[in-house]
Length: 203
Image (cartoon, rainbow, N blue to C red; front, side, top):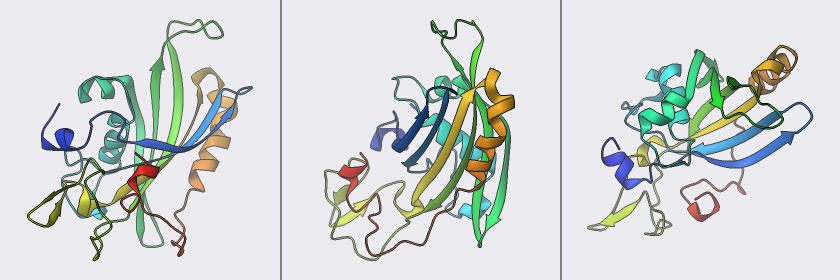
C-alpha cells in the first residue's frame, strides 16, 4: 500500500468527516474533514513548501473508505486547479476537482461526475506535553518511553469540501466557491480539543 505510513495509520479513510450538511434539492454537499498528512505526498515538515496539488492529492487519496490502493483512489478523482493563498501568515490550499460517480435512478447518465471545490489548512503539530497520549490511538505507538508516529510532528489537515453534480455546477458552483473561500481556522480557545488529545472523538 505504499510504505510505513500506510501500515501505521490505517490506509482507508484517514480523512474523517466531522461535520456534513446536505441539500437534497440541489444535490449539494458541504463537509469538514480532519486527517493527518501523508509523507507519501508531503515529505517536507515545512508546510510552507507544500504545493497545493500535492495537498489535494494527499487529501483525496485518504478520503475513500474502500479497500483499494492509493493509485485506485486517485484514479477516482481528477484535480482541475490548485493554488496556495497566504491567510494571516498561514498557507491555505485551494483546489477544484471532479469525481466520477456510479449512475443512479435519479441520475442515470453513464458519465456522472460530482464537481468539488475545497480548501485545506494545517495545524496541531507536536506539543510539549505527551502524557495524554495512549496506545488506543492507532497511528501512535509507545516504545522506550517515547511516542512515535510518522505524522506526529506534521499536525493535521483540516478541509472544507463543497460539491454538486457537474450538470448543476453552472448554477451552484459560484455559491460553493464563495463558501469554500470563507473557510478560516479560528484561534483555538480553552475548550478546543485537538485530534491527538482525544482521538476517539475522530477515529
